[in-house]
Length: 337
Image (cartoon, rainbow, N blue to C red):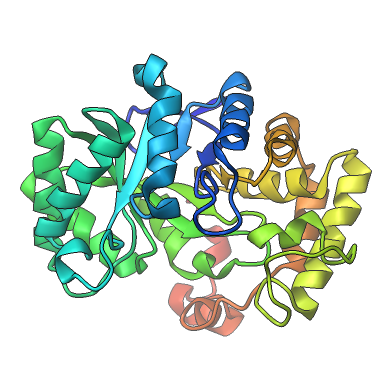
């Protein structure tokens, strides 16, 4: 396992993050405590130190398991958890981005995790009702108090993230250092605005669902059962074509399809640290093999081509030769950047 700096921070994290949404059986498809510990040990023994959980995952069991697993060597691990999603259904005081829920949720996570600080606190999803200033001042207070070390943001429009960090920069508050988004060969729409924003502002990206819910492992083209419904984004004609290419590349590299799909996210132009999870230790061990893989440029080009998306306006518009001509008076090729 190699390590990366998390965005513009000096925080050192492993190049693969362990997703623990499957730690616990409360949601009907996770691993029990014994299997969760096996997955954790496989990850830690491979050199992984970057953990991802959330207050709501398996109704709090994920945080409890993670807290117990790292308790004997807490400071070694970079522990990330999230706030925003409800802890009590039907109660507005137990959900959202607001300062009240932020402080309440963090206290609850600290208890479940059996720790007195969180290395990376994520805003889980933007609720569109709280001012940027309230969020950024609130998380900055938590950093100042020592209960949180760094902050990140997930499932939020690019313009909101950029505006929030600009406000924080101007006021001397803590800024988001990482962005968590769904990103994979099947889901490349973040390339329209989110990943360019992250690259521009120096945010690390932690792709969630880099295997597209297991679709990119090839289970559906092999006729196996899974949790993804047919005709969804992850299981349709396009996703099947992409998966077939992933399988083809994997055979050429003597790797598994999961390793190829994960490695593709890791070889992007921006800092990309995929989140890997699973229901059993064999899946975790397979995913970790992506750390030893390198996809040659020509095969990366094939994967990019089969999964290419339309970027839409204004991106496609600005790439037209006629537009470039009028912008640069026909002399763009003479400009050295």
